[in-house]
Amino acid sequence: MKTKDEMAMIKHHLSDRLLMAYSAGTLPEAFNLVVATHISLCAECRARLGSFDAIGGALLEKVDASAEMSPETLSQTLARLKVQGESPREPAAQVTDKVLPQPLRAYLDGGIEAVKWRAVGGGVRQVVLPTSDHASARLLRIPAGTSVPDHGHRGLELTLVLQGAFSDEADRFGRGDIEIADEELHHTPVAEPGEDCICLAATDAPLKFKGLLPRLAQPFLRI
Ligand code: ZN
Ligand code: ZN
Image 1: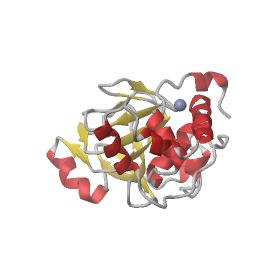
Image 2: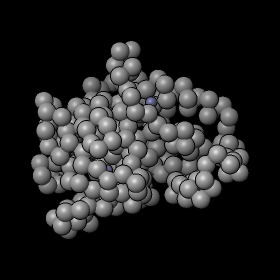
Image 3: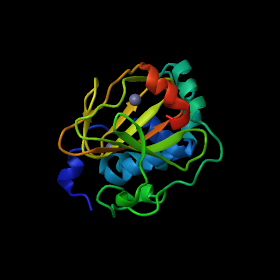
Image 4: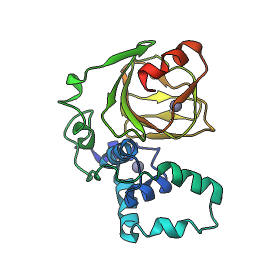
């Protein structure tokens, strides 16, 4: 179980848009998994989800006509997120593993110790999780003090920290924090010294790496 103190340390939360789409069941499985995992760690987002659930799935259609957001951006985002018939919703569950919250454990055989990591270069290791093809989800293990290659994004990237912490151009992210990256963010995440940083990351489009080597390796790594 998470202590109240630990929960209070979560600084970076899900956006209303993600919570709404999750509530309406329109997210691809990989994003559903990240949202469900954050919610299992975060009482604040769990409460916000509760109010969206109460409003119901009809909300999304009404939001379409809202003047608050640029209609173009909104429809683009919804088009990106709207994939029919994705996985069942994971209920908010209590934490039963020190690193892996319950929604995530359903995707792995055993706990964090049993994960079959594969090297992706620069000491970074990953395991791709079995989700539908509309978006991909992976666990990333970044050695303490190491950086992930500098990259930009073509679509949406959600990164949820499960162990350790990383910092990038935007801020510092510790356990439970979620970074929402889109086309506008170009970043070089660096794991803090002391403990390997383990993250759950989901993307709906290939990342844009600056370096040649990561670019060459991309098709094989499904990043
Ligand atoms: Zn939250
Ligand atoms: Zn990124």
